[in-house]
Each structure stands twice: as C-alpha cells, then as structure tokens.
Image (cartoon, rainbow, N blue to C red; front, side, top):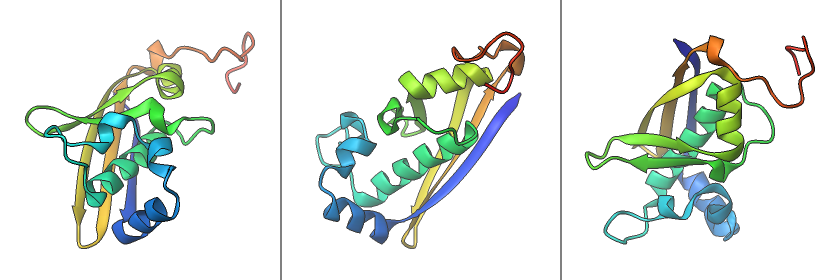
Length: 140
C-alpha cells in the first residue's frame, strides 16, 4: 500500500550557488559516498541537486515532519544505475512510525532543473508508535 508520495524540484544554478556560498553545505546535506561517483570523480552539481530533491521528496512522503537529518537518508545507485534509498536514524524512525517498508525513487535533471519523486510503501497496520506517545494518544 502506498503510504506517502513526495516530489521536489531544484534549480541547478541556484543549488550550485548555494554550495559555493556555503562550503560546508554539502557535508550537511550528503553522506560522503553521495558526493563521489564509483570511479572516484566528484559527482556533478546536477546530480547532487537531484539527490537533494530526492531528500526533500522523501521528507514530503513522510509527511514533512520536523527533525529529520539530511544525512539520515542516502541516495544510492545500484550497479544498473537505478537509484534507491538507504535510511537510518531519524528518517528510519519516522518511516517505522508510518509502517513504511520499501521506497521507490526516480531522479531527473534537464534544462537547468533537477527533480525527484519518492514513493513510500508499506503496511500502516505495522506502524510503530512514537516513543513520546502516551496510551491512546494517536496524535503524539
């Protein structure tokens, strides 16, 4: 069952300017492996912008809660080049709260714009309540 869908777009030039203006930004947004291609070359700005859009789309698929850490979601690529998501920490916790068990992600960049769509699938009946919820408190 689809639990959530998120979509996001990022202007590549604007994203590049933000990275240039704030040199530590890439380290706050990405897991180290996301910054590099398998051959050891630095990933291009369009590709990074698409990965950033995927993280924004992921947050939207989870209901856009506050407190998610950018580096708790990693956009990876299978040997075929197909993107997939690896989550941990705050993102994995929120996914468990909603019963998410699998992800689908699609990335694109063209004509100066990067985009991503994320679909979260799972079983809402398998949702794990938040730690700060009391008995009978479904709203947290």
